[in-house]
Image (cartoon, rainbow, N blue to C red):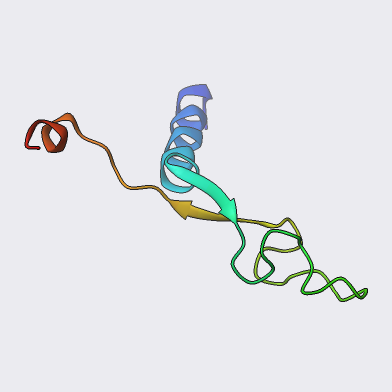
Amino acid sequence: MNFHERKQRRADYYHRFEYGHKLRDCGACAGSGRYDANGSPACSSCDGTGKERYKAKSYSKESECKK
């Protein structure tokens, strides 16, 4: 596998899993990373980060012009 093939694979991965995703506060733990304040385990929904990823709506200029 040469450089250009590896570069294409990296670009494909980025566009499938990273591009267009945003972070918001986790709904299960309200962004704290834990279920409650009494030494509970880390939130399993967000893996203790307090943030969850979501796919943002796509933006197009055509939809803006129709308003």
